[in-house]
Length: 164
Image (cartoon, rainbow, N blue to C red; front, side, top):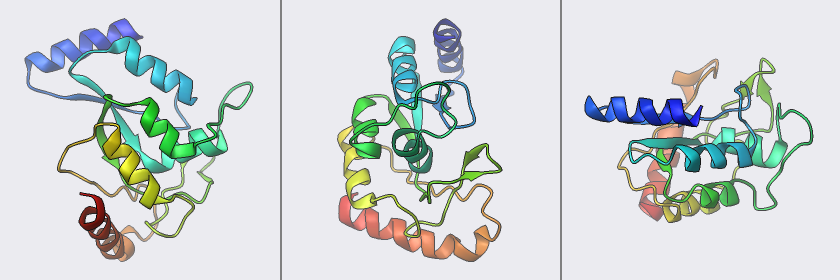
């Protein structure tokens, strides 16, 4: 798989397209060590990781949908970001209540309503080398996303003011 993604990253680079992999609980390779290992195996300048805060929480803190023995990180999402230093090419900022949506992917709770400590996570993401100007909010599958989008933007604006 690393060879395929490396070749894909090269093909994308020739066309000016950035290749980013978003790991999540419902996908193959969802343990932190598997994600980190793949990021470093591919090791192509045009391949990076989409670091979705709630997916990172579900992998590092909950161990959701991991086959075999659960692999949790004592430092949680902060440690996960640090393990991916130099590999984070995009982010999704969204909270987590520790549950799965339809027993498949992470439930994307509005920012500030879940268990993620963004005052610790955002600095870790920045320390890991994320330097893009985009700080997107991901309300995937949230039933009333438009009703909470404004409060989420205000939350992210506060994070940008504090850390950006």
